[in-house]
Length: 59
Image (tube, rainbow, N blue to C red):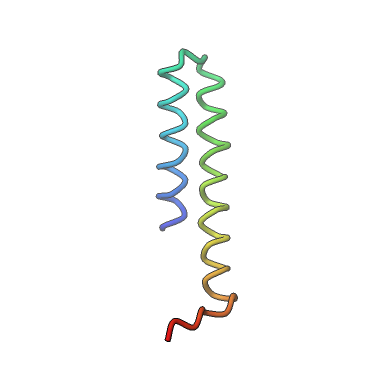
């Protein structure tokens, strides 16, 4: 669920910024799709790094 919400949020911000910049409908949709998938990739990378990288010793 977090992946989906991240995709919607990052894609939505990119789409709104494109809209405010005066982009066409195709470019707005493309930004929504590209940055939405980029947000999901970042979230998946963070999840994998948290799971598989060793934890720092903070003692």
